[in-house]
Length: 325
Ligand code: BDR
Ligand code: CA
Image 1: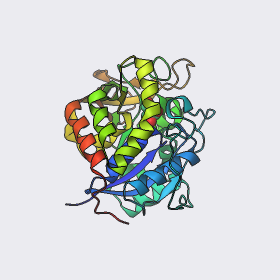
Image 2: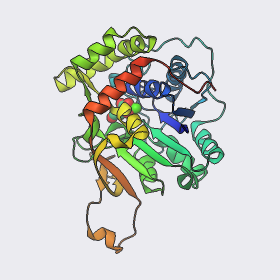
Image 3: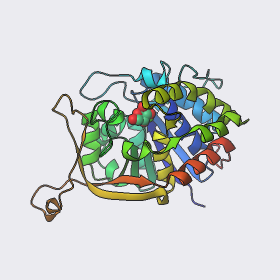
Image 4: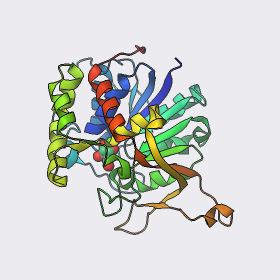
């Protein structure tokens, strides 16, 4: 089976770690590179977390690069309340391998990896989009050379989670998100509209709690802080699978049971709405009277039951990898 070549970019908080670990366990996946970014934790703490995840997932050779430490045009804002000071709910493991991050920044690592594998890479972005924007600035042609970008970020009809209309990954760097949505690469947007319904409830959590694998124990450990946050905020037990949903859609687009395609812009000016997605659903805009933006595939429905069971099966199975590079 030909490998699915992935570049992962994220802010390596709790759900990024779950997504990364799940991907490590998939034998058909070749993880070419991981980049980290400000968001759930600092980009440096996120890199330590990503290294731990790659080691635990049986991928000790995957390069992990520290990326943007701040957004393009606003002050940095770390979501410690959701993910803890270390990004993993106070349970970030000590890195046993002594591995260090790559000696190039994540944006350059994206460019080099894409140029080395033209037309072959899927980028799975699970944090603010600063590194992707910087990669586009370094080499705009990367947008023509990746297979697709699948990103967790934004919301269309669901309320925001950082302000009434904005989702955290977009609001943490709206200028970067705008550049990503304007660029001519195929983008699939997996936002709160679907990730808030991909909910890990008590039954699924019990599977993780009972798991005897090292992956299962790690996940149960880091989930405690996240569960407390989500259970109290949404008054129901459990938590949403934000970043894992994007990871699973990247590997298996048949999990998407509803989507539409439209140009997406990002609100930059209004203070209260900054980071809100502006989706152009007008039919007549397609008639060519206005400059056209690329169409983004906006996911509106997922096969949740299959997604959650596939996720848990893969996550808890442990590494079954063909890649030991
Ligand atoms: C997104 O923001 C971060 O807290 C999560 O890791 C996820 O990527 C959800 O809005
Ligand atoms: Ca994330």
